[in-house]
Image (tube, rainbow, N blue to C red; front, side, top):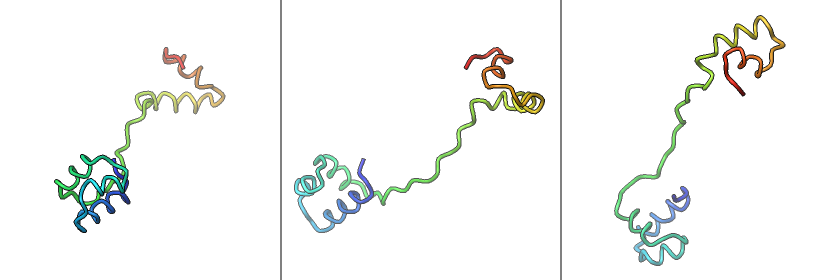
Length: 87
């Protein structure tokens, strides 16, 4: 995958009319990568924030909060043992 800088430079060289083999050599990438990017008119890739994954302990959250509220000195091992699980 090309970095944003390499992507911009590659498209600049393509607009300038440089041969694809020369572009590949200058950027240190495969000629096929240059051909692939030349064949598509994709804009600069943009990445947004990722979706949050649900927590692994979500089904046990209410139980754990209740137990910690009553017994704040409990360790994670003891809390999981109360659920029949191991850490």
